[in-house]
Length: 229
Image 1 (cartoon, rainbow, N blue to C red):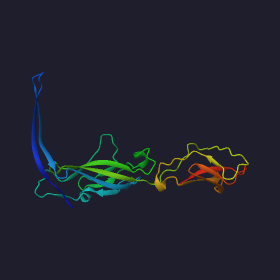
Image 2 (cartoon, rainbow, N blue to C red):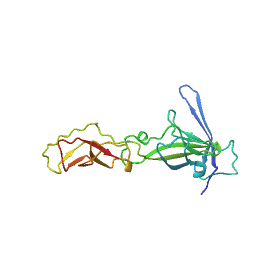
Image 3 (spheres, rainbow, N blue to C red):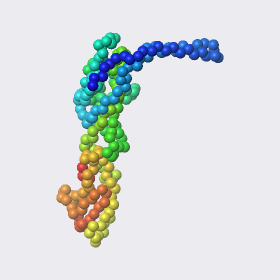
Image 4 (spheres, rainbow, N blue to C red):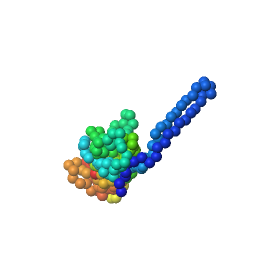
């Protein structure tokens, strides 16, 4: 269904306020308070993090099905203006004349944008776009769902983990080790742990979620712990 840009109502409001102490008057005039059809809208997009500059994400003119009302004359051509706070680093840009949305040179880093979210919680980036001129003004809220990619390696709290295991340790003995941390989520996060000998030959020891289960221990062996991803 098309969304026609047009004026519904127009009001003029005058407020007169008197300062009793000074005897002066404060005149507040609010003219041309315009209410527009579908004045507020939302649009959702999905974008993968770490995309290069100038990747097309969407087209607001088409995606919002905007059409101009031929009975409403415009003071200037239809324009799209990105609205963001002073000091914010824009991660997207909008072509003023077409409404096309592109990535910028500022890379979208999900882990930085949604710092502290290490689970399946979704990460969003939000902006607002003003549709101009005044005759057809509306403010559109744009939400970008940021898709995670596997761009982080899991890390342990320390590069060296010391575990004391007696030579006569029984089979299937368990020893707790600190868990690794991976800011990526889902299939891009930590899937399993395993213990490898030097030279990357697989040892007879497996670790799952921080629990070490030993099937054989050789006091001459030199093993190291690696997180799998």
